[in-house]
Image 1 (cartoon, rainbow, N blue to C red):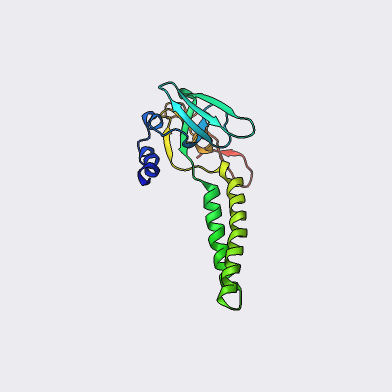
Image 2: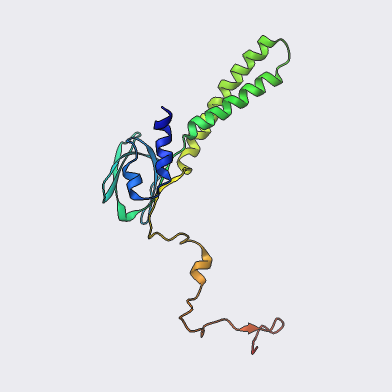
Length: 180
């Protein structure tokens, strides 16, 4: 059982398309695309040399196929529902046991009740937050730009271009260009 849980983690360290192809079926993935958007997590159905096949279960069952040249990155997914339920239940048990005065039996009862209530809230918040978070990258496209939205890379000027359009040095009082 432990080996089956650790297999996706070990595969995530490879970082190539073969790591995607070796993922076990029904592994939850987050796919980011170079062109287009995806939302939520999908169940991995398989990958060929040219495409990745994924199913989005829900009210409308959607089967998607993503061409490999459009896949920017593939991420493993955390189970945010289980994490939220565990954190909520643990916090509820501690709060119920610590905040209830009286005999031990009463504290245990309130610890169980608080664990169930806060565990439910944690599960709900995990369910809401789940589509927005992902885990470790299994694959990143080698030709995808790392920071295409970063403003400093857009404004940098190539060393081979002439420096004719550089801004001038301005006088702080008159705001007119001055020679250096």
